[in-house]
Length: 455
Ligand code: TYD
Ligand code: MG
Image (cartoon, rainbow, N blue to C red; front, top):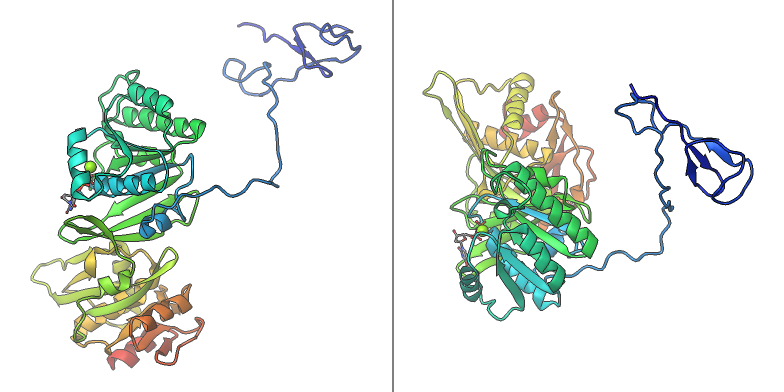
């Protein structure tokens, strides 16, 4: 085994030597040469050894720099999800199922950003330029100053970006890009990773904002953009149910703004239209109160949104009763059913349970627990909740109701939309307005007894 070589360096000028001497040949100083201590104590063959790097320039946290200038697209829903506009040199991933409307959204966004002065390039790896142009015509964006390209070779694209120097680049989609130094086929994990790495580091180096489109399949089989999520600053998911025209753009990671912010759009014949008052939209078909239907006053990101939970409970013809959930977490539903049974003595055994969030919305907040419990009970007892009533609150395993954040915003939104009653956990900030009566309960049994009579 090779003997680890010693190395020496001068503390005055930093010159390095492989043997000690009294005077530095570099700067002429005396008694400044010392033996280097190894950088690492790991095994000699695997460690960094004695070889020293150069010092990194350190700074402190105080800064004179202004916050990054943000460009607004004018699409308020998109700007808010981005954290208040587009940040220069940021890398953004927009994921979503095929056909959900990613290309439509990004073409519209590219056009808006170009119109507000950013030099914008749209690279399509899936559609020919003529196809993109036709879509732009149909969306009424034919005169937007967006430069188009249909390309998939990463080397060609980076070369073009270097000469064109755009401020915003849309890559549609990352799965179609291929780097010629990577052996595997386009769409494979190593290609997607390589392409995303090259594009994001290019973005940082040259100050270009890059938007990457990525397909996710329901079963996550294809090398999804998941591997890319770590590399980018912002991850947005574009979701919606097929058959519903509503689309929700959700920030799941954002280094430049709040995560969990949503933007709501509607797919129309002429592209995506902003929905600035989503509560009104998700509740638009409300008539007489019906059993199993409960309105939840939720918070999505920074904004209150009212959504309707619908439950159906029916005797099960099967040996094992069904629990089916759309738009809410199945595990959480099981928990609420268990709490209702254990703490309130209301069994759901032998009953099929279906739970749905109206309008294709997905709810993730635990604050919806009480609304779900209310919908389940209302369906089971075939008794509608009082009309014009919103419900929110978290349920703990003990059956206690826990106050949730932003009570005031939830109540304000309910009041704004003409609701007259709110059911909430006790202990939350009780503000209740002039025409909104607030009913608070400490635990689930109390709530069940009061609203549905028997326990
Ligand atoms: P697209 O943006 O191509 O989806 P993705 O890029 O996510 O695969 O959108 C495709 C769907 O959008 C398609 O089913 C048709 C519909 N659509 C409209 O309803 N109106 C429109 O104006 C456009 C452009 C598309
Ligand atoms: Mg597309």
